Figure (cartoon, rainbow, N blue to C red):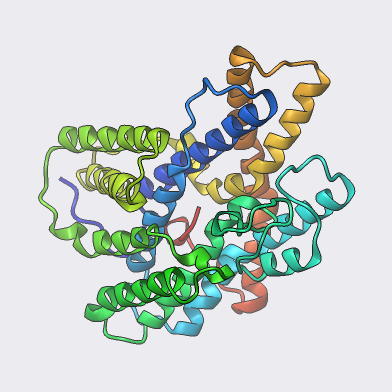
Length: 364
C-alpha cells in the first residue's frame, strides 16, 4: 500500500477530477444552447455540478498547499491573483470586444463599460444582457466567471485565516463564511452582495475538512472506494438533473466531497490508473472552463451555416462536437496563452519564480 501523501505533493486524482468537472460544465452549457436555439428538452439537463466539484477541490487545495508551511497573507493573495487573473482578464476583454462588434454571437453578454470594469475586478454586477434583477443574474462578461467571483471571496477569507494558528484555521474559515452568508441573506439582501448568499460556500469548508482528515480516514479496499466514487458521481448527475428544492450543499456538495475522497483514497492505495489524456484535460481545465463559451457560440454559428437543425439527434451531435472542440481549444489556449501568461506574470511579480505546480492550482 502506498503511504499517505504529504501536503503539497502532486495528486493526479485532483487533475482527473478537474478535467471531469470542466467537461461536465461544457456539457451543461451545450445542452442549454440546444434548448434555447431549438427548444428541444429531451437531452439530460445536468452538468452544472462541475462547479460543486471545483469548489470542494478549491477548499481542499488551499489547505493542502499551505498546511505545515509558513505562508504570508500577501504572498498567498499574490499567488492566487497570478494564477487566476491573467487568462481571465484576456478572455474577458476579448468577450467584451466580441459583444461590441458582433453583438448577436454571445447571447449572454452585451458591451457595457461598468459591467466590464466590475468583471475585471471579480465583483458581482448586474448583467445588462438579462432583464431580471436578482442574484442569479449577477454574472460577469464571461458568464461562467461568476464562480471566480466566489473563489476570490473565499481566497480573501482563507488569507485572513492564515493569520491564526493552523489548528484554528478551519473554525476561523467556518465563522467568516457563515458571516458572509448571513450578511448576504439579511441586511445585504437586494444588493449585489446578495450574490454571496449561497450555501455552496459550505463546499469550500468541506474541502478544507476533507484535507484535514484525509490521513485519518479508514483504509478500505480500492474496489469499495471505486463503487463509492461512481455512486457519488451518479448522485451528482441525478440531483443536478432533478434539482430538488433543498440545500445544494446537501444534494451536490456532499456527493462532490465523497467523489473527491474516493479518488484520493484510490490514489493513496496505489491503484489510481495512469490516464495521461485525462490528466492533460485537468491541466487545461481552467482554459477549457473559460474558453468553452466561445467554442459553443462558434459551433452554434457553424451549425446554422451548414444547415444543421438542432433536433434531438442533431442536438446530441452538437453537444458531442462542443465537448470535443472545447477540449481541443482549451488545451491550445492552455499551452499558447495560459502558461506563457503565468510564466510572464511570475517573472514580473515574483522575481522569476516558477508558476504554481499543477497540484497547487486552486480553481478549475
